[in-house]
Amino acid sequence: PKKEVYLLSPSVFEKESIHKRKDFPKVLTHELAHLFTYRLYPFFEPHWLIEGLAYCLASQGRRDSLKKIKISPEDFLSKIDTQKGWRGNLHNGAYQLSYLFVDFLMKKFSKEKLLKLLKSLDFSYEKTRFTQVFKQVYQQDLDFLQNRFAKKISLKNQKRKEVR
Image (tube, rainbow, N blue to C red; front, top):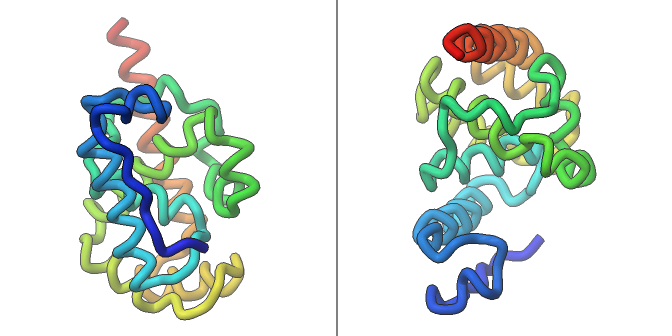
């Protein structure tokens, strides 16, 4: 894991990256969020947590943008928790689902609770251990909250389809 962020000049940002020039401040904020998160939790998995948090802090996501999501919300966490799974689902809505789930956790429980989770993780990612620490911090099972979140997402998606 690298502890560095390489910056492109905004003048070449669009040409040298996949992002538009107007997105430079948000992408910079996203990458800086990784640096700060890494100080609390020096690992990159679960990937949904690390990327979802950076997306939230950089205000890159939209709560109403569900159309890019091709991963089932019922079991998405296990599909995008590792870097390998993340890469395999990158274009299936991994960023958006991660953002929406982290946003859900912060709104339902608080930013402080998420910070407490990060501070409680003093080991490299191991799913069973992570879910135990998650349950200690949130007093709820991760799978239960994922299902609750999935229902919320499904309801929003149904309402959007009905409006059309």
